[in-house]
Length: 403
Ligand code: SAH
Image (cartoon, rainbow, N blue to C red; front, side):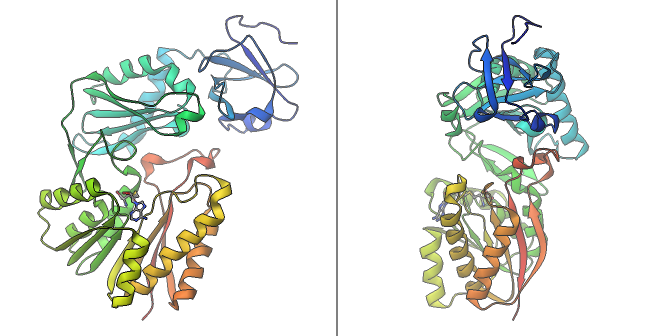
């Protein structure tokens, strides 16, 4: 039976043995681990977690509809989840990015990376002084007002914009929502600078919060390897890898994406950066466009493959792997002797080892000798605790092909 240590907080009791993940500091409790719930918690409200012997374990947020039933705010069951709690978590998230040297007034940076910053379900990306937020879990959504007020209270931020329109909200029973929450209406496009490159970010209609901040370190690597090269940037979105390559001295940039608005922004980004390299945009499906170039015998010195998530869940891994293999075969076939491939997967359901195997199979089918020059991952503003490996999703390789 549950005793009421704090009568205001409902209690979620776990099945025997299911406290192990909590003790290992993992932030999620799945529905199958829950033995009973007392006190009828509302969506997103605090619940106290207890083990099967009724010992308090942690405090978390109740998600009534998601298979992740509780997301843990703190392993201290007595922790108050109040304004000062959120203030401390947000401050330490800022402090980390400051230590990493990623907090620049005119830059872009992920400030809050959800579970990895102790704030499950909350994403905050900062573009100059505009914070773009995603409240993706019931718990984060429940505290939206206090989080917004705390962000607005910070010197780095003048506007809070919401992009809670990710489909994952459906699993939490939450409606999509987007628009201005606080501050002044932002510019139609926000210009950020990143290591000498400038990018226009569309926070209203762009993907995620507008820009792929997770690829920052990899853009820098592309830039360092691009001098004099022809660069094929597949799944280019707004052309960020191509701009980095151009600033690094590439002779030719070819972007391929199915999205016309993304490519239009890629052209504007090229103009903004004064790109003088040959610059082509192809509004096309990467699979068919690359097949076309293969039959024409077109070659590139460097190919970037940064596709969308092919596997949303474990059930899609096999099909996703076929997709990854297909595009990687095409890339290997289009690479000139000694060429470079930057190949990525952002499917969390696909582990690095599996991805490497798929790309290896592609190289064999294409008949290319290869060498992994570097393993690639998210930039450190997306870093995760050791105890939360699920937070990692981006994996990639810089590969050199033989002659
Ligand atoms: N590399 C980008 C991010 C890529 S996001 C960056 O660093 O900013 C994935 C992109 O792939 C999206 O822009 C989407 O429009 C595009 N896309 C998805 N499927 C595609 C396909 N089959 N062919 C071409 N582009 C595709």
